[in-house]
Length: 331
Ligand code: AQP
Image 1 (tube, rainbow, N blue to C red):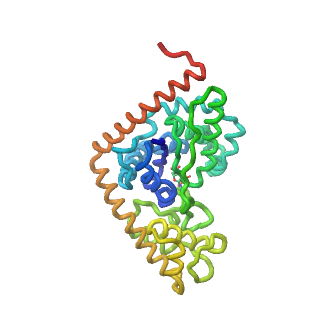
Image 2 (cartoon, rainbow, N blue to C red):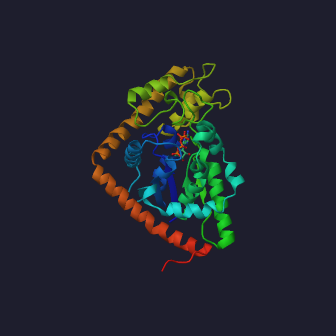
Image 3 (cartoon, rainbow, N blue to C red):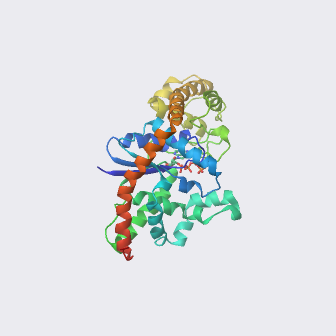
C-alpha cells in the first residue's frame, strides 16, 4: 500500500473550513486505499508563541476533531508529532542539506516573519519547512494530502529527498502532493482575495467548532461582489465564486448546477442556502468532537497507539539515515 503522511497545527483549537475542504476530507478518503500517518503537529505550533495549557488542550481538541471528521484509528496511525522524536532527528540531517538561500525563498516564512516582526521571528519559523519535510520523509511517504498553500513546502521536500538519495544512496521515495481540484484554496469570507486562515480576523473564517448561529451569521455577512447574478468568475466575482465552491464541495452539486438553480435569484438566496449546508455539516462534527473529548482516557489511548505505530516505521528510517550519513552506531 502507498504510504501517506499529513499533519495539521493544533493552534486555534478548532479547525476551519479551509483546513477541511483543502486537506482533511482527503485524509479521510485516502485511508481507504493507503497506509496513512496523520499527526497533530504541535512542534510546528511553537514556531509562534503558545500558551502551554492552551496548546495541550488544543492538541486534544484537534485529535478529537480528526476522529469526528472520519479519521479511523484502526486504519490510520493518528498521533501527536512530539510523541515521535524521530521527526526531529531526521529534521537535523535535512537541515544540514538545505541551503540557507533555498530556505529564505519560502513565501510562507516571508509572510509570517513580516507578521511577527524581527524580534518575534524565530529560527524555528525559518526551519519549519525542513521539519515538515522530515515529517513526510520519516515515513517514506509517497502521497501528501495538503491544500494549495503547501505546494512550495512540498517542492522543498521533494528536492531534499532527491538530494539525499543522490548523495547517500536511494533512501526516500519522492513524495507527491494530493491537492484537491476544487476547494484547494478556500478564501476568507471578508477578504476573498486572501486564503481563509485562522490568523485573519475571525469574521471571515468558518471554524468547525463555532456555534452554528455564529457560522450562519458569518456566511450571511460574507463580502460579495458588484452585480446580482450568481455565477462563478474568480476575477470579477471572487466572493461569490468562493461561496459557490464551498457549497459545491460540501453538497456534491456541481458549480454549473448551482448557477442554474440560482439563476434569477440574488446573492441573499445563495447565502441562506449555503448557511444551511454548512450548519448541517458542522453540527454533527461538533457533537461528536465533544463526545470524544468527554472520554479523555480513550482519546489518549488512541494517540498512544498511533504514536507506537508511527515509531515502528520512523525508528527504522532514522537508523538507515544515520548509517548512510556516517554516524557511528551506538553499541
Ligand atoms: N484556506 C485554505 N484552503 C485550503 N486549504 C487550506 N489549508 C489551510 N488553509 C487552507 C490546509 O490545511 C492544512 C493544515 O494547515 P496548517 O495546520 O498548516 O495550518 P495553516 O496552513 O497554517 O492554516 P492557517 O489557518 O492559514 O494558519 P496560519 O494563519 O497560521 O498560516 C494544510 O494542508 C493546508 O494546506
